[in-house]
Length: 190
View 1: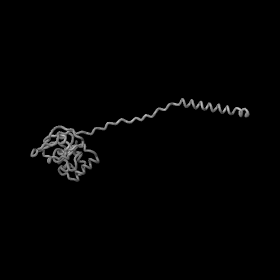
View 2: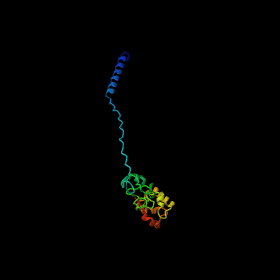
View 3: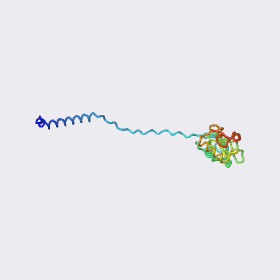
View 4: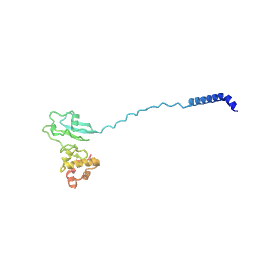
């Protein structure tokens, strides 16, 4: 039998090789066509709009009225929004660097004119002081609050978060019932 195999070896190997090539061709032709990779870029997300403040500007300005200002606005920004000061405005009696707060009324007095009570939440002796946003200087304008206690208030609200009520200021070391009663009518939490 080995003589027979020897005699037909070349045709057998050729036939097997042909079968392998045909099977490979069939497999190649039946393979699934790969889908092209599609890169989809994400749509730009809408940035949250910054908080806007509404303030009422009155007095010696060119265009008194209600203006919308950015969250970090100062009294100077409110003055510019109202068209600037009139010729008889007394800007020396207004703290132009003070931050404004939502619903503030900012009054610019005339030279020799009366300063109206402010509904501003800032310091400088006018209006109520927001203990969550007031600077050390503003806090020091309160009775019996010195630089050390003002800094303690700022450190407390930085570490613990904003005060929920005005009574929360009594959590600051150095502010007891007596001092709280002195400043109670002068502070606010917004």
